[in-house]
Length: 92
Image (cartoon, rainbow, N blue to C red; front, top):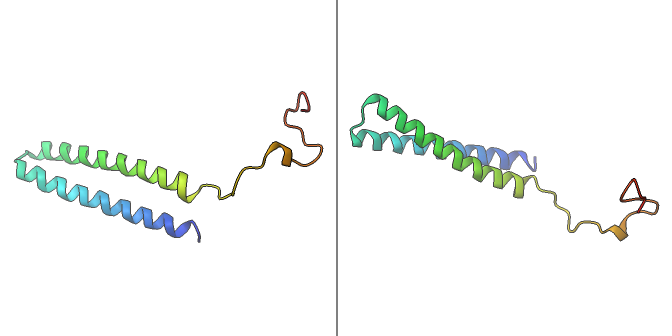
């Protein structure tokens, strides 16, 4: 549950942003007087760009905040258990 709820919040936010971008882009295309084909191409370009931006934002949120490991600090080499070797070839 720790990761599920934030995931759905981000998904709902993304859907809201993409819907709003499509709505405003359509209104802008109509006000510019574009033909049907030009309007579709314009909307597709706006949606693609917005989807790319939201993908980057989602990546940062998921990679660095939501699914990152929550350890205080990494273990040092000295803290390894006895008999643990770093390099399997040299044993050092």
